[in-house]
Image (cartoon, rainbow, N blue to C red; front, side):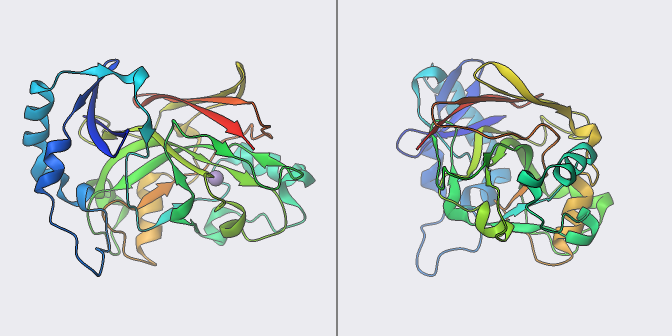
Length: 284
Ligand code: MN
């Protein structure tokens, strides 16, 4: 199942080029009272809502995907986790290029661990990335994103995929510089998630997916998740050994080689096998 959010917070099922409105299922979610839940309520409830969502999608009059404004498919992640230099060739290019590393200590992921991005940086595919500090180098990083489906506290690699709700395409936009990653990667609009979430029953194996990012038609990044250094189960084990993962938490799994600067006016087209394609504009 491909689940999207669109327009005025509607929930849709994507079938082919069409969106089937299943927003009525949101009325079955628990009413939110202060304090707010520590997880995304829709992702947490998804296993119990699947049949109702399918039935609503079957009954809906579909509208063309091309005509809707796509929001991030997960509305309220409580954590956005990032994996630094998790592809060997990106590690090599980062070490070789001072405009990427800025004399900061580029450490292997096993030493550096993971980092966090501010949830306020999250946008969907139909919103533009709005550049800040355009005098500095602002880079695209295409990444496979894992959506956590249920509470995960110190889970093992062997069990890790049981905790995944689904996958989406991510852009971990980054301004290069000497600041902490958590600051450089948390600018408003610098975390793109889309175009929808493919549920884990449909995408069962994330270990060899081709991915590509083009800018204005020319290929910048082209790789496969088979080249990842620490794979999805390893990242879940590592993350959940430090903090409990909650439904809706996102893990950006790292970018392959080919990162480069974007400018206002650019259009990034991002594709990951078995998920789809999203087109994201860059503005100032
Ligand atoms: Mn990244």
